[in-house]
Length: 310
Image (cartoon, rainbow, N blue to C red):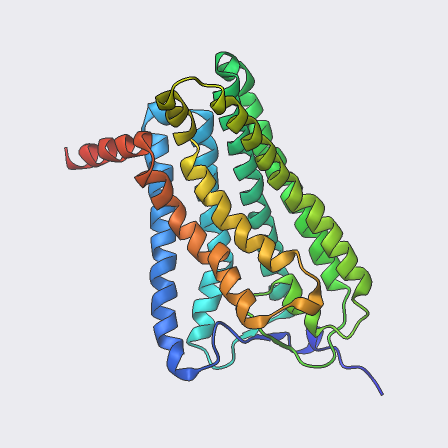
């Protein structure tokens, strides 16, 4: 019997957040608001940093790029999800699916490498403050940013090339709200065992590297802070890391839950919730976390507000 390849014939159907017709419009309203808050909040962070010369430091250089990446990250997923919530077909072409997967993986990994770069910045600021300007010079910061983008896009390209070689011959309904690796692999009638090994190994190498970098940086920071004699000095040193640690916990907590498990343990409902956390909720919360818990950002926001009103 001839195997029909749905990938090239009719693409895929994205099942979405929920298949219940009664929930489509309420979910559309909720995610539209969250998307607008994400875009406006992160644009405000970028505007504040670029308008205040006192925020032209390595930490805020990485933060502004993190905000830009978060905007791109959610824009890859949410507009298509919103369109599907109001559509009866919920279709996406095979090429469209691979393009979405490519940019999703690229921006997600860029996020993780930027978080690692920010951890290194905090490490140098706390453990080697007298050489901070020399170590975290503009050229090195730019190289760290370019390295983050290059590694992320190469990783994404490899993943998409791997997925493009698969055949899809049974159901073509993706039980997710975007084209992610695990739900697409679930549909393939090809032998995916080698693909799963490559995906797990390569994902472990690319995602674990910045995560281990963050863990190592904070281990060094904790050791350095504990050596500070006064409690006030310890709090002052560690308070500069609070916002970053919160974002890292939100991002990596859900990412590890979704991706570092075998395909056999994949759960549609649980993974949708965890994926919503790092694709929609975390990018939306980042501007609030960094602006509400950061004195420099508060000052920059007030300065921008006064400039607008004057």
